[in-house]
Length: 504
Image (cartoon, rainbow, N blue to C red; front, side, top):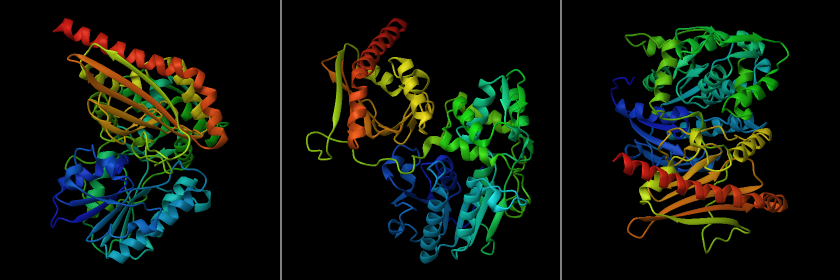
């Protein structure tokens, strides 16, 4: 996938904790470049396999004052961030962030900006585009106006394990053998495999200085969404799907439909669905003059699906659409005893001892969530997830990137891994909609020669009267939910240890 380069370049990558950025960094390293990652929270890169090979700069493109120094010595700056799903003001946020990024790059003498934008139909006036596509196009214009040669690579649906577009396609097709669908299923789309996107991004670092424009990128197939679902079913070995389009499902209604069936929350599903109203097909293939097709050609739709499903089956998903933290997510430090001075703090602690080695308990702890569930009252957890979806949150169904291993920054249903110390500690920060901040901390420590002490803390820092009311409203259920969780985790560890001993 990577291409020979001469000479090596110093690259700045934004969005390194996100879906594309987290995959681009190792490709740039393989191509021989030096990489610096601009991130809000450097600690979230800690567990990535390439962390030791990159520099980090702490900064936020929405806060221009934090960008000073990040561009020093940089040849190529990759702009891979956006505010999709953050609310009605995301267009302004994206515009201001792009302007700040372009100004900082120009001041530092950066030679090139590479931006991954969205493919927009030429015949549709900007006012008629979806807000998502309109914003992506505007960001490209703002970056090009900043004085640094900018390559805006414009892609439609990106196919790869863990991408939001692929997860939508996958879950809709797998879960609904018969579908009543909106009219946009007959819109023509030119999808592209994530491997080809990364190849173009790496190649764009070496574009001539006079290339300052948008460049369409797409795979070899142009398909309707209906055809994509039909062909996905064939590749996945599913029976043929029955798809009945109806005109009454508006983008707003169909985004709720997508949110109901897939792990993608409404806040992200809606702009993606609105974008599917428009035909998104490449208007030119000028990128091939600068980044030639590989010997085997671009990856077709069927092969892209096959590769993505193999990654999912092999639990080898490097990044997911949920890898990036929610914009505006809380970043307060975890309340610590005894000197936290952040105000009121509610705490629910459960602790127990189990006569199995610590590693047996830890395997259960690290496997929590996703398909394994939360070890207590599945219906209660599901209802909480539905409630979160109803108010615009992420819900419970984001699942896990890997079924067995977690790393800092991973999304885990409606939590995010804030800290993990293998064999000892897992700390999760809540990302559901709450009137306050919440954490769940699971600790495993040796107790005696062969035993383990398991400790579980649920913490809640309320915001205002609503926060206090929320805690006391749910407090009666804590004994059942959290008590059952602690009990079932230790029971599961005991059963797995006994099974392993019998098998050995």
